[in-house]
Amino acid sequence: MADQQASPAGPDLSKGIAPSEFAGEMLLGHVGDDEVLLVRSGPEIFAVGAHCTHYHGPLAEGLVTGEGIRCPWHHACFDLRTGEATRAPALSPVAVWKVEQQDGRIFVREKREQPEPQVKGAVDAPSQIVIIGGGAAGFAAAEMLRRQDYRGSIVMLSHEAAAPVDRPNLSKDYLAGSAPEDWVPLRPDDFYAEAKIDLRLNTEVTSIDPNARHVVTSGGETIPYDRLLLATGAEPVRLPIPGADQPHVHVLRSLADSRAIIASAGGARRALVIGASFIGLEVAASLRARNIEVHVVGLEPRPMERVLGPAMGDFVRALHEEHGVIFHLGDTVTGIDGKRATLKSGGAIDADIVVVGVGVRPRLELAEQAGLTIDRGVTVNAYLETSVPGIYAAGDIARWPDPHSLETIRVEHWVVAERQGQTAARNMLGQREPFHAVPFFWSQHYDVPINYVGYAEKWDEITVDGDIPGKDCLLQYKRNGRVLAVASIYRDLASLEAELAMEKARTP
Image: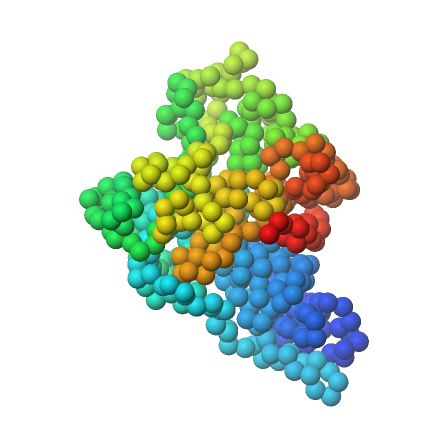
C-alpha cells in the first residue's frame, strides 16, 4: 500500500469555524496543506504560518504579546500583522493570511502578499556603512539595514572563508551528521548580490582611522565609511601545551573548523574533548552520534556548574554518561605527544581526534588600535555606540549597560549578537533605539534542550520548580531575592513568560 500523507492538524479554516470553536487565544488549523495559526490579540484576529522560520518551532505553543507572537524554542518574535521576524534568531517572515468573518463564522482562505516590513525611516541616513565581521552581529546588521529600506552602500568585510553561517549548528546537528550542509548558510550566496551587500570574504582589516573615517585592509585597500560597525566576534582559546598544533587537534568556531572535525572523525575510534563547556559538551554529544568513544577532560568539578549551578551540572554529567561519555573532571591536559594526551593527574588518553573547547577571547585588537574605550570588551552605550561617534560595536566584543542585571555585561551568545546587530543597524540610521533585549541562549544535548534567559554571573539562591533528572524543570537564579536568570528544560512557555517578565521589570 502506498504511504498516505498525514492530514494537517486542526480544522479546515477555509471552510470556516464558529466563534465558539475559537474561544481561546490561539487555534491551530489548516488551509489546504498549509498549517495556519489563528491568533486573537485584543479585538483583532490574525492568521499566520504555524511554524517559526528559524528551526520550524511550533508557534501554537508560543506566547502572544500584543501584536507579536514568540517562538517557544528559541524566542524569535513575529509581527502578527505583517509576519515580519522582528527579533532574531528568525530572520525570515512567516506567511500571513486574510481573515474574513461572514455569517457569524471565521474564514481563512487566502494568503496575503507579504506586507512590507515596518520601517521607522532614517533620521540621518549615511551614504556608506562598513561592517567588520561576518558572524551573527555583522550579518544581522546588514540584513536589517536593507529591511529598513536603507539605500546606501553596505560593505561587509569578513576574515572568514565562507559567507555567514548558522554557527550554533556547527557544534550541534551539522557536526552530528543530521543536518545537511545547505542548512548551514544564513542566506544563499546570491542573496548578497541581490541585496547589494558588498560581502568580501578572506579579508582582514588591519587598521581603523576614526579621524579620516576609513578602514585599511591587509591588501592595502582604504575603504571609507560614514558609519562603522565593529562585529569582529571572538576567537577560540588555544592551549599553550606541547602538541596542540598537530593536524588532529581542533578548535571549533568556523564552518572550516567543523568540516575539519568531521573529516577527522571519519574512521576515528576515540575522541578527546578538552573543556566541559557548552561548546565542548555539544561536540561530545555530536561525536557520540557518530558512534565515536568520547572522553571529556575539564578543570571544573561539575560541567557547566559556573553558569547553571551544581544540580543542573550533575544532571548534564549524568545525561552525557548515559550516552557513553567518559569524564575526567578536576583535571587538565599538559601535552599531546602524537595521539597520546597526558593528564596533569598522571594518566594518559589515546585519541584519534582532539577538540579543544576551553573558551573564546574577544577580538579587540582593532578597537584598541583605534583608541576606543576598552573594558574587557568594547565599551558601548545603550545605543551600542562606542566612545567614538559613528562607530558602533555588537556581538561578542560589546560590553553594554544591561537594564536587567543592572551591570555592564559582555555576553558570548548567538541570539544576543544577532539582536545587537539588528539594533545597531537601526541606530546607524539615526533611530536611537536602546538595546534592552534580555540575553537568551539555548544548548542542545542529545534530545535535551536547555534554555537560559537573563544573566546571572553570581547568585545567592537557586530555586527549582519541577524535576531536573525528569527533564521537566525551571530554575530561577536569584540575588537578594531578585530573579536574574532562568534556566529550563521542556518548560518553553514558562521560559518565554520569564523573558517577558524581565523585560517589563527592567529599569528605564
